[in-house]
Structure formats: C-alpha cells, structure tokens
Image (cartoon, rainbow, N blue to C red; front, side, top):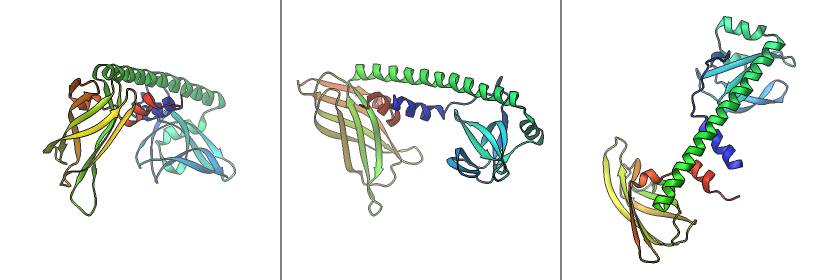
Length: 263
C-alpha cells in the first residue's frame, strides 16, 4: 500500500488542476515562496516545498498567526493543503479582501470543497495508475520482460567515455541464459552517435531481476540519452526470442517499484 501512495503522489503532480466550479483564489508566489503544513515554533512554518517565484497558487483561506501577528494563507497545491506566509504571495487586492473577510461558514465550505476535490482527483489518479499497470502487465506477459531502466551514464570526469546500465525483470516462465541489448546512443541535438549490441550472461530465473552495467560502451562524452531498439533472449531450453521496440517495455522506476516491490 505504501508504494501505491508514493507513486500516486508522483503521478498526481503531473495532472492539471481544474478550477471549474471551485471558488479558490488564484495567486502567485513571490519572495522565494515556501509551503508548510505545520509550524516549527511560533509562526515559523516547517518548510515542505520550495517553489519558484511567480509559480501559480490556489488559495482557499487566510488567518492571522497571533503569536507574531503574521498573515498566513491556506494553499491547495498538488493535491494537498499547505500554508504560506502572506508576504510570499502576490494576489489581487479584491481577492485578498475576499479571503480575509470570509466568515467561518464560508471557510468550512471552502475546506469541504478541498476534500471533495482531492478525493475526486485521487480517484482519477488511481484509475490512471491501474490502467498503466494493466498495460505493462500485458506487455510483460507478451514479451517476457519489462525494464525498470535503460540509461547512459558518464563514465568519468577525467576521460571521454559513456557507459550503459539496465535493470529488468524476467516476466516469462523460462530461465534466461543470455540476453542481448541493441542500444542507440543519441547526442544532445538528437543525432545518432552510434548503435551498440551488448551481451549479458544469466541465469535469470522467472520473476527475478537482471541488472547489467557496461563500462565505456562509447568512447565519447556526447551521449545524452539512449534508445533500446531490440532485445534478444536465449533461454536455458535453447529457445530464442527477439523483441523489437524495446523502449516500449521501459516501465520507469517509480511505476516499476510499485508493480514489483516486495513488502
């Protein structure tokens, strides 16, 4: 369950928030804005998020921290409720007046809207996660392999060289004896550097992970990213499987951990 919560928060941050039907006030951050959910001491917020200046905010309330007479806005940001100091918010005067003049009933209505919005969007996120899981499980069943990552890495700051690393899970019912990865390397402007085929030695049993690190695959520092073209697998029974478009089998680390992490 903890992995679902972690991945849900990661995915949630990429979903656009709709203000339709919600009376939140749109404002912007200023003066190096930071968000918190609790106070460390007095009216000093325990910083949880650091934002950029002019980053969009949705405000739903205001109160005065009487201990130090500091104004605090209530913020709805990426699916969670936060607080931010008044001096770090750029807001229209009429919106400021509205938030500061809300009575207790209006504040409760706004907080209820937050709970309803968060619940609805969390359900939408979970539905998207479930759809992704189903899609990749189907691909794993069909192809017998799913990748956690497929990355180039800088070999050394002192030499010109780029390595390649990959982590995957054997989703077939057979043990892998050998595996070949054909990888295209791409420079920062999107052009081909070269294509290499790399070999890994098993055995890798069903539902087990394989991880390989290949040093100095490219004697160049121009490799920005890679594309996994084909994957060829030889199993212990002698059968061979060749998979095209290997890049489509890269799940990504967060979703992979959610799908396969053992408690």
